[in-house]
Structures are given as structure tokens and as C-alpha cells.
Image 1 (cartoon, rainbow, N blue to C red):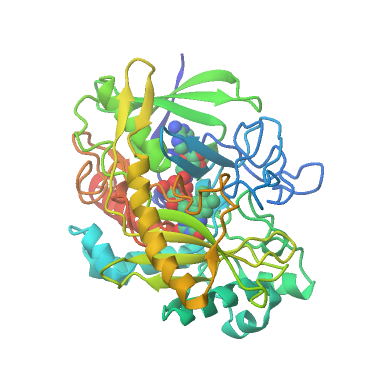
Image 2: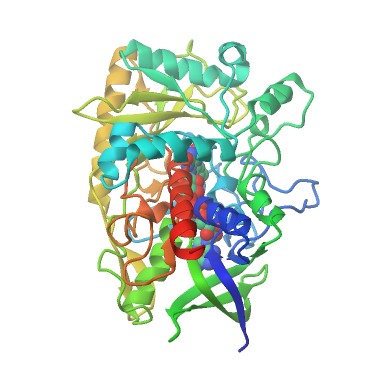
Length: 503
Ligand code: FAD
């Protein structure tokens, strides 16, 4: 087969991949981005690119017969999920033995489906997780650069206090305050000016129309509108979609060889392609990058990869849960889909938790306060290669999830006790399931910075091979992770361009 060559190849177009593409393109380096999902720029028959959470269709999920939303049931009823046609939809739920992981698929990766919460971690916790990274430089240079590039903005506090769309957040804030807990505003990449126009009826509704995990048609500054648009604007970057990289190896001259499978809308492989490059940047996310490297090491394609490849994986302590409010503590029939506040109890040494106040826009009053808790769960797992099936497995166990659930329970037992409220038992599929600890939105680790790579994401043992995504983060960062992933990628690209490529 003919090998298509480029000086640089980037695998994946999420945060890590997008930063790499832009900075390489700006440096004048011809760069090819390979993305397994599609480019989301074409409207369907309804005139919309993405479908909403309340009326999901084939665009919602990656090759499914039925949607698999995080909230499985309401009043124990199977009313949330819908039958759909298999199609390369925008949200995937990857099932491992005892953990499932939500990820975005498409040009922009997770930025297409996430809640947009753009949180910079506590400096002390960042320094704890990345002891070899200069935290002053991160907070002085790379975090500010990432926030500026991502278009981070904050809700107008006066509008927040008055709008019906955030009543659910104010009700949760009150319950937290009753328990003596601190809440804090959280910035977002959703354009709050646009959201106010939605509320005023002068702009097409998106965040105010239930759009989020299956994509936003307006208002969201996803990577295709920021980093990737700028990358394409350099004239040096090309993005190939619907191409999944399946293997990586090295040629005798030290260049890298990739095999990619191009699929069609039915998922059938229509072409197997070969690529060659001098510089290879892996931005397939914690799952995608870890899988490629673990397989490459254990099949002998890249045999010198460090034993640390595949290790240090965690869920960022994610747990979802709901509380039932009193009848007089309404959450509102109208809810914006972008979270703007969290309960910040991270400084509590006995039980560090940061809990985002999550929306549950069902279009009617349901009195539910929903949360995505980020707990400081120290448990870690490892990806392994199963030579009998060729699959890469994840060793995370139910018992490890129970540690997160226990921490979330400790915090929300306090909230319930102070408010004389109870949990909701009807949301996660079975009567006993109060704490949804069986999935995560925040897969982190598998190729940890300073362990499987050097302190800048250079993969140990393999010159010109780099990791730029969430697999660098050692399983936990204490807040929603994309600002950290972006800032670390900016730091890596600056260093690599200066020391490895331009010189
Ligand atoms: P990703 O963004 O996952 O990008 C990886 C890309 O690579 C994907 O497009 C994927 O299709 C592609 N890919 C993978 N493997 C291959 C391969 N072999 N070949 C070709 N392409 C490949 N974080 C926050 O900070 N704030 C939030 O509010 C927030 N909310 C979230 C809500 C949801 C529903 C989800 C799912 C996530 C949320 N996150 C949030 C998490 C955040 O989106 C991720 O941490 C982030 O996207 C990870 O960035 P990344 O660069 O590591 O990889």
C-alpha cells in the first residue's frame, strides 16, 4: 500500500490534539490530523447539526441501537433512553469490565459533548499531582494561555441571581449553605452573552434547549471553533475524519508508521491506510492513546516502551447523584445545560470533594438536585493487552469505584442532614443505586507525565513520539480536566518546537 507521509501526524482532535495541530501549523510544519469521528458541520433534515438530550436520534451516540444516557431512569421508568439507528454519533460510552467511560467522537473530541466547565485546579493540588512541573510557570504562562485560547468566560452574577434558567443552581447553593458548605462560581466556554440572548428570545436556543451531551448547535466554543479553526487557518494542517488509527510502529530510519482504518457511516471499514511521519503526537485521549501504546508495546511494535505505559489510570473520582428537595424548594422547569457552580469542599482534609451542581433539564418541575462529584479517590488502575483477543482491557474494579461513592456519600449525607432531605433512588436504573459510580466523564492517565514520558510528554525510549492529552494526568486533578490538559499541551508544544523540531 502507498504510504502517505507528512512531517507531523497528530492522532485525535480533542484538546491535546488540537493544541498540537495549531502550534505545529503556526511553526510552518505540515501536519496531518487523523480523527476517527466525523466533522460536525452539516445540518440534518431538521436543520440542526446536533440533536438534543430530550429527542435523541442517530446523531447522539457512536454506533448504538439505543442511547445510553448517564441518567438511566426517572421514577424507575425506562423513559430516558431511546432506540436509535447505528451511526457515527457524537457521544460514545466505552464499556470496560467494571467501568464505563463517556468520550466525544468527532472533530473537537470531548469539547463537542462536554459541559464546558473550564476550571483551573488548585495550585497546591496541581503541584501535588505534578511534582516535577514548575507550577509557577504553569499558573503564570500556560493556564492563562489555555483559558484565553479556549474562550473561557463567566456568567454575569446579577443575571445568575435573577434568571429562571439557574434556579436549580441557586436551590442547590442554598442547601449547601445550610450544611455550612462553600460554593464557588465556575467559568465556562459557553458564551454567556449568547445565553442571555437565548433567554431574551433574540437568539436560537441551545444551552436553553436541552443541548449538551449530544452536542450544542450554538453558543459553545468547542475546539472546532477555537484551536482547530486557527490550526486550519495556518494553511499547514489537514484533518482526515472517520479514520481510526489501529497501530503504530517505527521504521528503521526512526520515522513512525501508522495504520488507520477509514470507516463509512455504517461502521464498515472501507479502506486501510498507511501513514508515515517524523514527529508523532498522540492526542487520542486517555483511552485512545493508552490503547495504542499498550498494544504497541505488548505486540512488540514499540517494544522499548516503558512499563509505566498503561498505568496510573483513574476516574477523577467521578460520582453522579441526585437529592430530592422539599416541595417548596423548586428547581424550575427551565434549566440551562451549562453548569456554573460547584460545592467546594476540597480543602476538607478528611474528605476532599468538589461537586459540580449539574442541570437536569426535563422541561417540568422535578425537585431534583443533581451533582457530579469529583472526589479525591487515590485508587488507580492499569490498561493491559489481552493477546488472545487483541483487546486492551482496563483493570478498574467496582471496589475502587466504591471509594468514590463513599466520599460523595459523606459530603451529601451532611447536605441531607442539614436540609432534612433524602437521596433520589430512581435515577440510575435500580432501586439500590443512589451513587452512579459505574461511569466517568473524566478518564485520566495511562501515560503519566514524568513516568511513561519525560517531564514534557516525550515518550520514553522513542524520540519524536509525544503524548499531549489526558493520559498524562495521573488519574485525578480535583476539578473538571480540560483546562489542565490544554495548558499541559501548550507547555509540551512550546518545549518540543524549541528543542526538538526547530533546532
Ligand atoms: P478527547 O477530547 O477525548 O479527544 C480525543 C479524540 O481522539 C476524540 O475525538 C477521539 O474520537 C479521537 N481518537 C481516539 N482514539 C483515536 C484513534 N485511535 N484514531 C483516531 N482518532 C482517535 N471536562 C471539563 O473540563 N469540563 C466539563 O464541563 C466536562 N464535561 C464533560 C461532559 C461529558 C459528557 C464528557 C464526556 C466529558 C466531559 N469533560 C469535561 C471531560 C473532557 O471533555 C475531557 O477531559 C477532554 O475532552 C479530554 O481531552 P483529550 O484531549 O484528552 O481527549
